[in-house]
Length: 151
Image 1 (tube, one colour):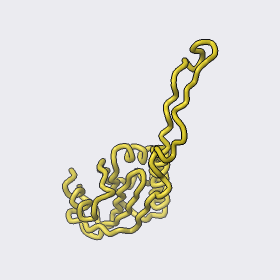
Image 2: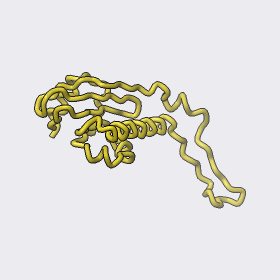
Image 3: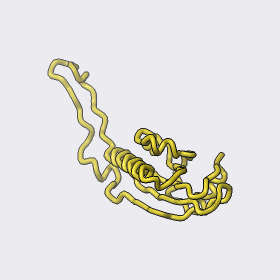
Image 4: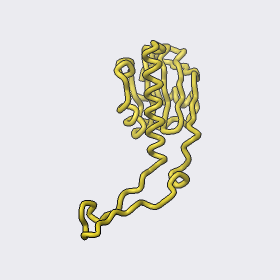
């Protein structure tokens, strides 16, 4: 994937976000870190959940609720979705401030889907590519190589 000079590359998952800017050219990216954010307020689901999934029943044998169990809320996933929405909002603010002309997003499929739900038109208009991979734990040279290898 070609990365235009001065493009912003965002590498994100539901807990980490890395803003990079390409100081190189389209074929030879030289990504420089602009900003790094880690959501330190998102413990594992087991640390956030305090009870088992609830059950709903009716005194009339099934009733409105059908006597089934309710699914347990995944608080960790809810927090990751909130973090993705905040990332999209930060992109909106930067796009409206004309901070970048070209944008590339790298995120795991679920995070990428959550980001897409919240893209502002200005962000969508500047989006040059998306890569559905989890590269938040990778080095900048590895991220550059993944972009070069992507079609």
